[in-house]
Length: 141
Image (cartoon, rainbow, N blue to C red; front, side):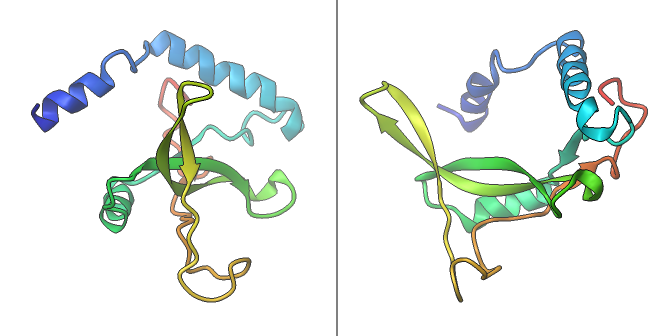
C-alpha cells in the first residue's frame, strides 16, 4: 500500500465541517469564559505546533513503537495570567485485550540528570499559544 493511500485512509472520516468546528470552539470558549473573569480575549483558543518541530520529533523517535504524540495543556504559573501552553510527549500504542482497544502510553524518558528536574527529557514545549500567536481573522477565533 502506498504511503499516500495509507495516509488518505487514516484521514478519511476525521475531518469535520466548518460549522461543527465553529460550534465546538464556541462551546469551549463559553464554558471556559468564567475561568477568565468573562473576558473572552483571555480565553485560550489553541496553539500552533510548527511542522518543523513535528518533523524533528518524528526523526528523534523513529522507533516504530512510537506512533504519535500526546498534547497536554499546561500553565507556566499557578493561574491563567501566563496563558495556556501545550507540551508534547511521544506515545507508544499497546493493544489492551481486556478493553479490546489501543492504549496510547506516554514515553517519558530522562536522558541525563535527575528525572524530576532535568530538562533533557522526551517532554517538549514548542507550542505557540493563542492568544498571543493568534489569527484573529480566522472563523474559529
